[in-house]
Amino acid sequence: EDKVVQSPLSLVVHEGDTVTLNCSYEVTNFRSLLWYKQEKKAPTFLFMLTSSGIEKKSGRLSSILDKKELFSILNITATQTGDSAIYLCAVEALRTGANNLFFGTGTRLTVIP
Amino acid sequence: KAGVTQTPRYLIKTRGQQVTLSCSPISGHRSVSWYQQTPGQGLQFLFEYFSETQRNKGNFPGRFSGRQFSNSRSEMNVSTLELGDSALYLCASSYRGLSSSYNEQFFGPGTRLTVL
Image 1 (tube, rainbow over the protein chains, first blue to last red):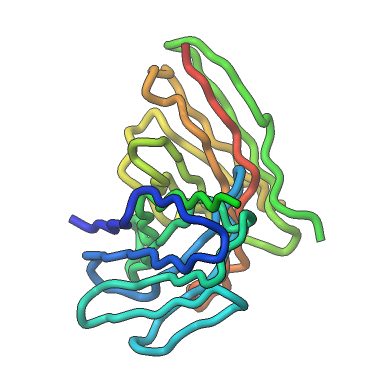
Image 2 (image 1 turned 45 degrees about the vertical axis):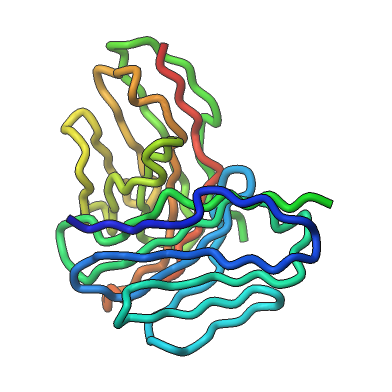
């Protein structure tokens, strides 16, 4: 059964802290792994990772994929209150006629001043 | 460019009723996917439509159905509502060309459905 597991489920940190969010997966015919940030309603796209060991970076956020160990991490440095959100990990599988995007339940990050 | 829009934003129904939700994708996007989000299950894929055809389907009962129109707008219908159908229903659009390679999905604000 395909599954995507995120940890921790929730996290509370102080502004300025660095956090690491984890995503492990068991999905056949892996194609890519995606990270989203969901603040109020609509998730917004952060990164897409397809190759192992190549870090994607955007400002204070960075992510890396390990296809051998089947996991990815999302790092946020110097956290700000605006980083408070649910972070979703999704894995895209290459297949036709069936579900091809599997989401984890998310990590709820709360950054307190 | 206008984003993905969903109507209505909030809906309250009673068990046994049916409901239709609407999603208008970003102009030029041909793929519309629907998701159900609940606190316990997270985001779960319902189905994807591309050029008026259902291309992918998740593991939901037949009470959940959808369609896509020639202008790429999509509707989702849930019949015989159950309490467990209470959730946030999100739709997402993407360009998703014929190569079927992944294109970034843009999510709408969602419809919050409450079943009493």
